[in-house]
Image (tube, rainbow, N blue to C red; front, side):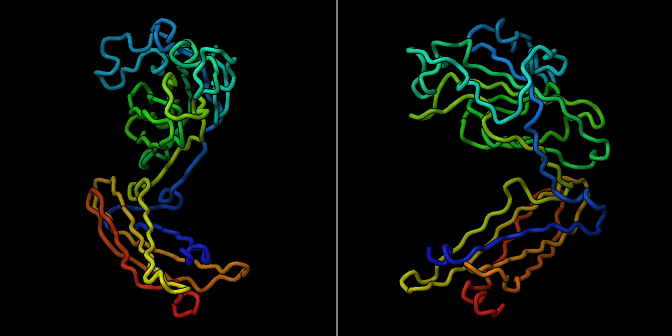
Length: 306
């Protein structure tokens, strides 16, 4: 699309929380995205022998009852002898080459013939201030290879089979605010997904996300563009923004959603005066989808009509 290569459209969405019982004071209403890459404990487990896998999943109710994670998944597990490292991390690249090794792991000693090298455990202790009690707290994984299982404070959060999908878990209801919290990830890289070197472990960044009860949903902004007439030399395009707002409070909330569009031309430092759109709405204990109807053309931005 020619217009896409010519123009740089930057969308900035701001949620302003107002009256109706839901209050926002300073940073408490803002989204924070904090790095969680430093200070992890790591050890290899075992894909076949539970004893070598730190007796994981040996308790009767390890998955049947909430908060019953066992082995390294328990917050009481002692990981002081484990290796301390920072993410991103790939333990496969550290392994020796072997003729029986999986070619998709670079012929490293990992895979079905090497259960002792195919499972990795990660643990991290972190604190959440008491002042964050009214906020929503989540954790984002950009990529874990592969078949990852995640717990926090012994509570099972979920499983992500793919090593190429980012994923998010809500931690809010499982945290000790003002105290120590432990997030645990078990990674099983026995099976590959591609025909190229894939590695093993938490090989991308991890983030801690904090929002107010009223917030733009995780991955809740979706922008599309449609070319009106592709047969002309410089076609116009219509841009549409779709935003999902979540209200996790037990009270109704009134909000204002500001959409700002900035346009720059290649080689120019000045910005065209942005087009501002304001949407006013009410969320009642759930999700509302706000649709901005297409009301402008890229050519209008260039000519200064908006």
